[in-house]
Length: 267
Image (cartoon, rainbow, N blue to C red; front, side, top):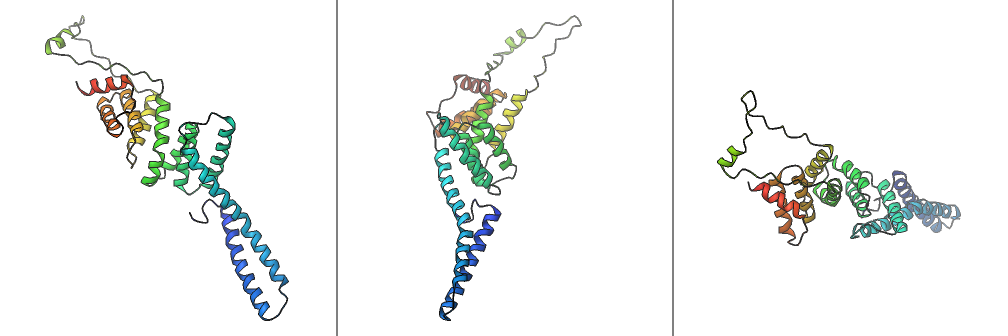
């Protein structure tokens, strides 16, 4: 970790100036001792230099402690149930977010921290701002749990429609042909419904998740499987089901999703 990590610009300036002043005062004291001169004034400079370095030094230590706490927050298997614990985590994350400007990796970690305490919307907003800057693969990998959580949140409660069964034979197709109208022509099939706002949001998040330059975990593939079923893309759904099971054979995927993906991708 760089000594300047997490410091504001003025804190970096204080640290540099304090160090330079400390070295200068130390050299001056050495010269004065050799020349047997009074060095009380130089001692004052030493004290001032220590004060200049002390404040950013304290902030650097606090930042280091907060990053350790951030790692602990992200490692939690579920959001804290204790309000006091969640409030403490929020304070840590808010402070780190303010100091993460220009540091996409830290911003991504903070975003994942918000996800870990159950603030998925805030996590996703921060993730969006990071992704707009086209970050590195490492940063994108850090954001995968955030995108997965947001995708699960958006598609929670979305019903899985039963897949449309294809006609078994030409005879059944003829039987299913609608009767001619009075004008002697068959009635046209209704056009496909326009995607809803939720479906558009699901499609956008799924696209972001699928296009990350990092291997996806089983949970992400499972979320994508449901997303593609909802979007009417069963082949994509089945591919993600298979990918999830290759990574984790015990991954839990809704039976409705499995059925819709399998039937829809095998007409």
